[in-house]
Amino acid sequence: MAAPCCPAGSHGAAPPDDVDLQGSWEKHADLDCYMVGEKEKPSSVIFAFSDVFGVLSGRHRRICDDIAASVPGSLVCLPDLFHGDPIAPDFSDSRFPRMRQKLFMPKMVYRIRYRFGWAQVGPDIQGLVDSLKEQHAVPFMAFGFCYGGYVMAKACTTGFFSAGVGFHPSPIVATLQCQPHNQKMPDLAKEVKCPLLMVPADNDDATVKPGGEFMQLLAASFPTSKSVCYESMLHGWMTRGVGDPVLPQKAGVETIREAHASALKLAVDFFMQHAQHASPVPASSVS
Image 1 (cartoon, rainbow, N blue to C red):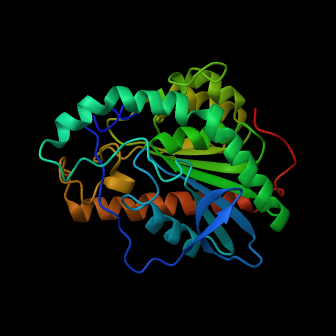
Image 2 (image 1 turned 135 degrees about the vertical axis):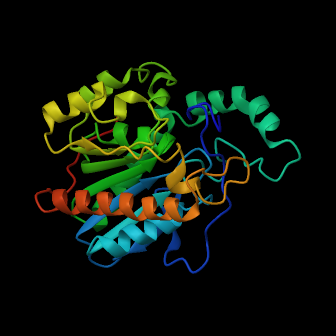
């Protein structure tokens, strides 16, 4: 596995896709944020939450650019919740990358639980929401990858967000949290306050796949919630499937790129569907 939150057979870190990016870095609520899209008068603000390899790795910023370009009037905000020190280092250039990853696993568990658990990142997200809602009285939505898929779902329990999308989300992150935030996915589903779209890979947990318990509970509260599984993809494919030197995607680069485009369209359509009926972010607090 690439990290403690990833299932076996998942992609590891990928080099930064950073050529001709459209956004810029700004400081909001003491967080470095990659901002792209309509900055003056956006019609919606869309948060992005990275996987454990951090905001600079793989396709994170590229996907933010694509979302901003595809959702009319949107402003996409990718905060560096790790403050420049990602949960998982990139060992792909080392002599024994898999061995070094394995030896670093206990430290990654510690960092997920104690340094970048919900007790730490929740207040950071609260501060960021407070900062941006002062500037933009519009609906807020969110998407995330892997660990960030959990952060997205947990953020959607606060009442700040009108819709959320999770690409190859990692349910195990919920069980790795310290009390009182440690919980199973069905309990998390019952707390979510908006529709969610989950986009798992073949080796992701069954609970976030079509018909899974998490999805059934979500759909009971929010009927537009759904899951679309990409059975030819492996966990991490959206941000890390192209360029992983340790675990090349068996489906081939062109197939991955087709899946990228397809999943991106799913997310864009989901955001546009729910932005039409959403209200501006309310005043509330992260707990």
